[in-house]
Length: 612
Image 1 (spheres, rainbow, N blue to C red):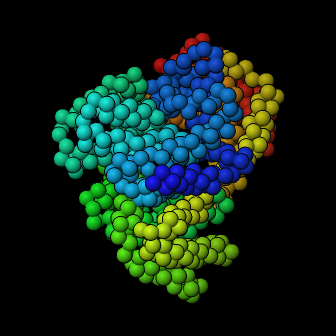
Image 2 (image 1 turned 120 degrees about the vertical axis):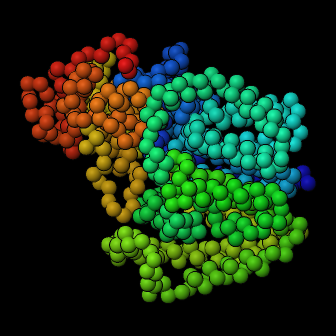
């Protein structure tokens, strides 16, 4: 038994090392998306302040000064922030992401053992959860990943507490749940509590136990929660149009990618063409095949309910538009399927007679792979826009899509047959168990890697140093003035219709144009920015309604409000006619598609100035 325990832990660590070998030994780092536009600048600022012996309550670099500690999404109190004190920022980010995946893997394994499932079932659930497409996608926004990997830990401590509500178990749950709250993105934390409440109802637990636990969690986290609630109530998040709740709804047709992931292309290789090639919600084909078998147990039915309800909620305006960004529910679809998988895997060890079911479906995948797909005519009910988009693609790109689909069917068929043959010997063979676990992992590895957006750390450092040199050559007065980047130059000019989502060129462009939060890396203060929350009074001060609650809308690059807010430097397109007044505006430099201008009439920023 001890030998099998060590073997199971070794399997998890081996798969973890294989999945991230390019980031561990190949020098690759995560670099794009919200990590670049929000998280890295915030972590660098936090580390810079801590090294000077100061704890930052406010951020002077964006929105003319904005709350920092109160923005819970930044996760100021998370221990992984300490990595930025001694590692280069993008390497610190990458080390943190790799560690978080190990936290998620071990958490799901602990949840399985808490439910008194065997080691094999717990390992299966850990693999499906820990390498799921959802966690891979969340790696591009680390505050969400920090919260997501703690979900199985929180549920495990909750189950233990409700099963035997001792003081020790209450303390452990309060610590786990409190840690999740301070770890970042509050949306997933809120959904976690909905699941905890559902489990309490499912187990018919006493209501006072739930209230007691919630009370202590609020008390422990009040130092972060109270400033957060104050900021939220005064931010643009309050009073949003009800229609916002439908944004990021998952179209029912898009659910095909949860079964046939090749249909969206390969994001990492630049061949993604729909849904940005997102693997969000993908857990592999075998968990889907095993899903009906989870109905045989009570806890299996709970996980199926979590998955089913979450999938319905993820469709938002196409089904039930109750929450903002309903697509985030795909994470709990993944979590529910991981839970049902470990329940089924545990049952299969005890009675491995269900392999025929998997064998038949897998054989169907192989038959589909051999079908004459080149003569396929898409059915009439496909959306017209999708048909037009497919028809407009060059022949070579349509060929990539069809080859990806054939690869899907072939891989699924082969893996399924291997799994079916191995399941027949699960009770007596360690080799069979290893094969089944390998099937889970290989599927997730093949398609998970399509969303691992990492490149060489040397490339990212090159972007940083190149921008540092350009800023130095401009000789800006950064202590007394702010800058503004014209949103007209935000879009990456090299982007093409087919593929290249969040590619290195686009991220390099954000450095070049000094997107406001990127300027924080160099100590530059901006009048606008990008953050999870913006003070409502500041957004309204420009007199223009901003539809996006994460930023401000400035009416023009010559708005009088910019001059009054200390904006001396404007990054825009060369020869911008709005800046033709040479007595007021002086062009400092031209760099290809952008130019930086100086406004001689800008007023200096007062020391310690904050948002009014």
